[in-house]
Structures are given as structure tokens and as C-alpha cells.
Length: 171
Image (cartoon, rainbow, N blue to C red; front, top):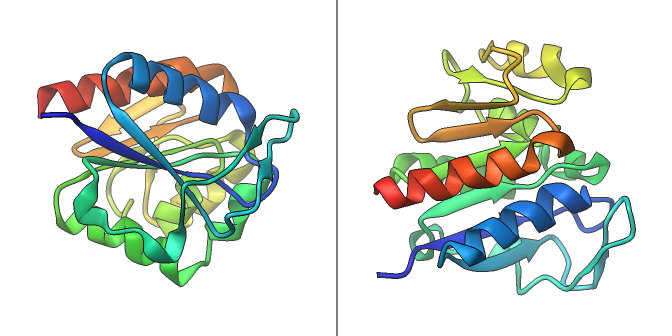
């Protein structure tokens, strides 16, 4: 059975490598990737990549995916306090899906109450925010705690993608 992953990007200023590298690794590993955002307009990454989302955040059905991935970049802060993003993340956690976030995106998981007591990592500027959400900050490049995988930043995007693929293969 084909595994499916949902990559959630900011409507603007997602981090190119944190989207493109995991997407490529997942697709090469046989995972079907869908891209969601708060807008169906073409999103532009911080380094200029152009991505046209497949679906709107409001049309996401968590049951359709094996992994939900929040991509980082400065624009990812649009989901930090977004009730819809929190709802998607909580449903993923409730249903035992793989829940992943990289760069500043783990703040969304922390604010949704999903990192309480969990080992996690995040981009250096946001350590206090995930700790405030109860996370046990480890400083690792990629951290996995149960069904939650977090990544620190763009240089760890390939390792983040590989960790997601490996976890999907173990399911």
C-alpha cells in the first residue's frame, strides 16, 4: 500500500530546502506527497522556489495521510496560533499519524499542546517557545519521540526527510 504524506507550507516564505529535500526523499521512497497551504496561490520560498499547493488547509482530511509535515521558513509563523493548523496537528496525533515539523514549525506543535513532555528540537531562535509549550529541547539536528519528528533547520532537511521515510517504512 502506498504511503501518503501531507506537506504544509506557508503561503509565502517557506524554507525551500525544508520543503524540496524531504519531498524528493519521500517521493523517491515511493511516498505520495500532497502539498497544502492557507492559499492556493503559488507560494514563493525564501530562496525563490515556486510551489502551487494542491489543497487548502481547510480541505485537509487527516485520515487521507500517514504523515503530516509542517515545513519551516519565516512564513511558517502564520500557523503558530492558527486554530485550523492546531486542529490538523491534534487530529494527526489522536489518530496515531506521524506528525513532523522542521525549523520554526515545531512552535505550531508546541502551541497546539502536542510537545508536552516530548523530546523535540527547533531552530535556535524559537527554543524558548517550544519549552514554554512543555517540550524537552534536545538541540539535536533531528529528534524523534514516539510519532513526533522535529528538525532544527535547513541544513538538517535531508536527515529530516530520511527520518520521516524511515518511520513510514516501519509502519
